[in-house]
Length: 256
Image (cartoon, rainbow, N blue to C red):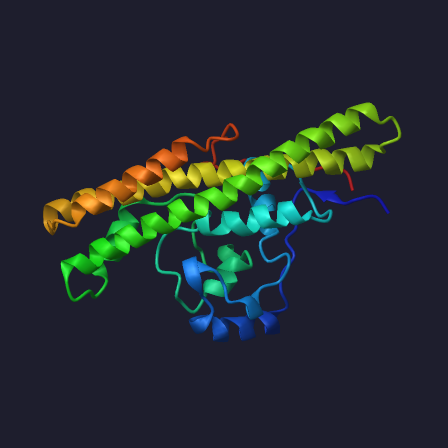
């Protein structure tokens, strides 16, 4: 049976499984916002590439992910999820791509929303807000390196895959379309992260500027240095041309 390439269909967890994971989610989030290992499945973030493709009207495929493609999506998710507090009851549902069910917007990080979240949190001192801001920025800086290391490898392998397809005459049209579709998903996943990082930087910048005015502290200079490090990391990792994700396009339908 040839690989399946479809315009839209998302694999869903069984309702019972989602319910049990949701009940456990209050203690599901570990270091750097990652899920605890017992709750993780191999393809927990397979939907990321499909969602990126559908957003710009590109086709999607359900062919098997390579180890690098799976790692690309796993490392992408913490960088596209808005930098709000992830220790919440529905964290696992977001990890499994059930974001539409709970109406969470992963496509645009409102630069004011992070600031509002931070200012509304119950900290004993103003320094606590700055420390939280610095931690969130630093976590993104730490995540960027591993993600783009995998991203460079995926792009390189996709270039080799394209060259191989151009040289082999016995590749079936279905296999060729599936491969081209996966290459597109990979590139769009990387583009989504690049777009999200720019939005996150804007949110952190907005928050720091408002904290410096409303609750000035000497630690603001440390936050500014950390934010500059994030900006440098973003500028050094512009790997693919980013499409416009702001407005969703109509998915492209391919024959089954």
